[in-house]
Length: 361
Ligand code: ADP
Ligand code: MG
Image (tube, rainbow, N blue to C red):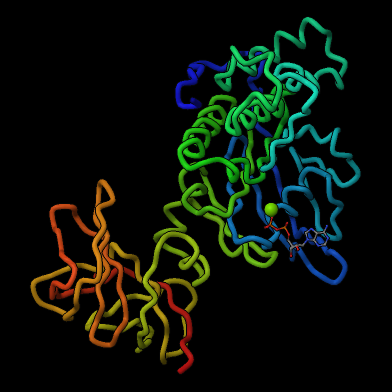
């Protein structure tokens, strides 16, 4: 049903932000009792930029958003929006729009009344309120759903209303905390792309929290990978994927084979391949290397292996093989090559640089 919703093609002028704000987090610390949820977080976001905060559950993503919004007071560092330290500024004065994972619409208000709510709080006149709320509803493709209550809307539609409600006050910054997590896969992708389209058209500075690496890579200008209260790496999706600066990032972003290898003279040596090491240099010795499936090839002669399975994924095929040492390797290759289960094949690692961690024997 959601797929048939018409998508508004232009953004109403009354919703356009003049320019997005700059947002800076400088050494931000947040403690919950003895637990340090944010351990000196630093990053800055340029006007109109879309940054995804990506990391496993419990790494501090929500805490970072709540600190930005003022819902959580910080224990150290500074948060600066458009050059102003917002330390003493309450949430409702920070000029921030928020969308959360769980549907947060007021159940006793219709879609349009939900969107008008923030304008009512700001004492915008009734006629202007209705006009702006209608434009916002149109922007998210729900013009004909104005009188519906939350229970009469699908999950995806409720999140569209929540997005319109967050944007109708023309905030300087948009914060989204796993807004798509509760939706099914197809709606999730549609809404994700639509959030991005609207964000670009409005030029609003946006922080999007997710634990889904594919989602982060798909929508963000830059992705900040978080782990246990710190940012491991911040970079464009391409940078994170091709040049992860830590093994955690290599493992968390994209698929990787974990291969037992040796570091010799600073290079990763395994299965006859010699690969440059990404990230910090390490002492020679046993390591686990993270090798992308597209950096393993099926060739006419090389390391012998046996095909375990092969799946057609539309534009490519992913084949799993087992080597004589019982290790499994995932290989990504062209669809024209159709290995069958049990086939003997030869594989080869390409010379692409890899991340690695020390391997204890
Ligand atoms: P994420 O959003 O990345 O899943 P959170 O920011 O919600 O993670 O939580 C980070 C850490 O802080 C977790 O260990 C969590 O248990 C803890 N935490 C979050 N909120 C509170 C709170 N109100 N009181 C105590 N601990 C909290
Ligand atoms: Mg969270």
